[in-house]
Length: 75
Image (cartoon, rainbow, N blue to C red; front, side, top):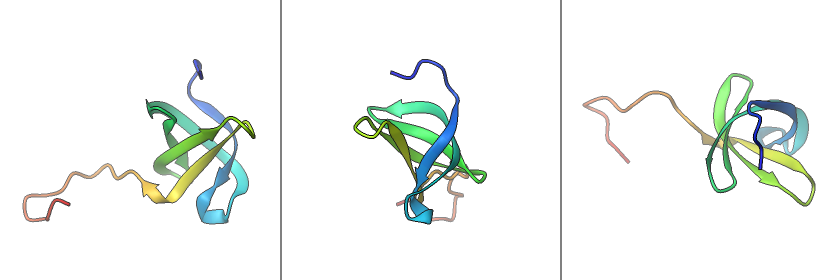
């Protein structure tokens, strides 16, 4: 659907209760699952075709770059 990535535009941000802010879609991860970046935080986003906009989940959908160390529990 979106052939030219990255996309930078106004998107609904979860931590701001859906307010529109500039964010960037970096790549597609799966069916309607996108890697987004907002305020330096990488997180999941979904696209809503009915309102033609992305919703960025920077509250619960954060993607951490760090792998668990040997002593940390894997969950």
